[in-house]
Length: 386
Image 1 (tube, rainbow, N blue to C red):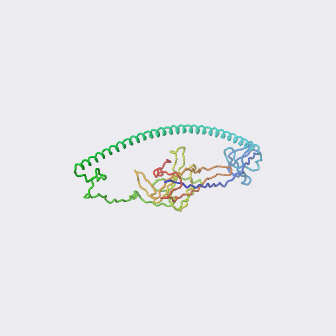
Image 2: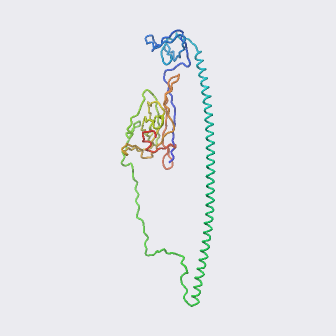
Image 3: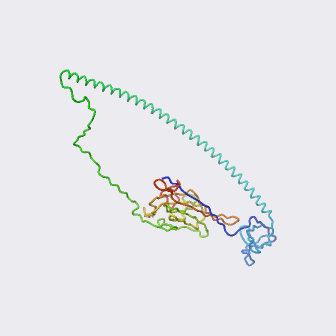
């Protein structure tokens, strides 16, 4: 059954409450003492020489400003700062120049890649054209040989049919001549035809026709011995023997809305450098007509494996716990990547979250998901990323 996957993603960005003032570079008018808090009672954590430029993140601390100096953050008296944007202008100019160099480099690399791709495409087209020509040549030769063979066979068949017809004619003439000779001698003429036109193949009116015994068909439920399980939305099925992994410092989420035609089990995999390094982070059961939030997801890039269906059952197969839907069961692996990495900006920290809608769509003979990403139940139950 062709599987169609309906996957709706909505990126929701939240910001931290601390805001920096964009592009505010100030210079110290004299030696600055950087303290750990906005008051003289806090410890001095660094000293900034006179004439050194610092980046002011916020001046909303009374007489104090929050600054960034080298790799540390701290607080200094605002009155000891003076406006000087020359270094900032120079930094911006350098950044713009660097960006232009990178853009030129990227354009050159893209042009080289396009040229290489065009070369490979041309070589592949030439190889395919040669292969197609060879194939057509072989097919033409085979068709010609078959036509010659068919013509020879037809000629032989025609000659054999003509020879048989001539032999049958001679046999009939011979039989008629024999009958005439018997009639001329006064003998009895045969009362039956010279040759029978209907064969009996040994049939007899006393022979009864055999009949087959009635066939009985019954349907076997291969899941009858499996244990039926019911879970609340948000629970982890026991068949996976897995505890989820959380990062409670991150207020992010994956919001999943499940339609009326199915229940789902969603497995979230954090992508590693290779597929064998992929890590299972969360397994969640969600009932139909339900919206579920999966929260506190560790940073990283994720993909999903999703099981659709009804009547969830569990069993031990070859010493391993196994779970599956037994009605309208479909399994798929998403191609979309969910990026839960936080992004630090001058305005704060971006914390990505996502919305996802899942359901089965009625189709002829059953249900589909709307995608071609189907996988087997074994692949879904496998804890690895394969």
